[in-house]
Image (cartoon, rainbow, N blue to C red; front, side):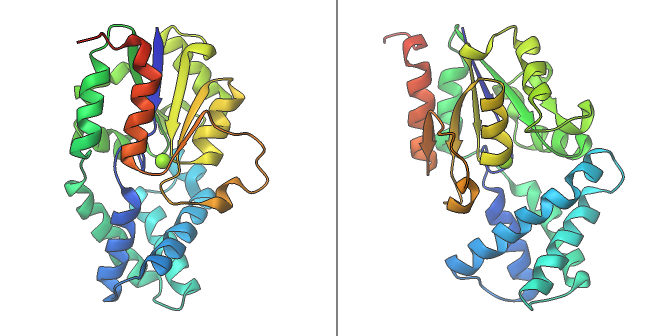
Length: 243
Ligand SMILES: [Mg+2]
């Protein structure tokens, strides 16, 4: 039996595009690729400052994102906290259009029906917000709700090894049979490695800064959804029946 545990944000859908699109629209600018990457990198860096408060329910997702947008806009001289708040509201409304890509959907369709493969999800963030993403993305097509752990509900978050051990109990599997799939080296991959799981790192942002000082190397590092789907199929290959 193989357990494949997925992160949601920037793993199952392209969150960073929504983040930069909302900022660009509010500011009336079009980022070039380098600007977009710098903006998103700083936006994600800000998350470390208030994720714990968000998951404890002390601030809302919109409050957290307003602060993050405002901080990054001020950093680059593009806007202020008011513009940040407008971007956070727009980002929230744009999330209604989020979707799992046809390619990734087809791969999940394929691997989720394999008898010896179980899928799970571990996601960071505030519970209501993450469950609404779960519903909007239609993730119950592939993952049971009781095999989904939202950090905001359990009192600790990635990379805390306890959240991975909780998933081991939920799936009834041991580390050597478990794979974590996520975009964050610091949270998804280092956390899972600490629990002695196998790992697939989806380096969607090409974030070499994410691995500075990190000696651990994931089992797979992929840079596109094509490569991610190939890696998922490789992990399952011994479990996929011959047709
Ligand atoms: Mg993520």
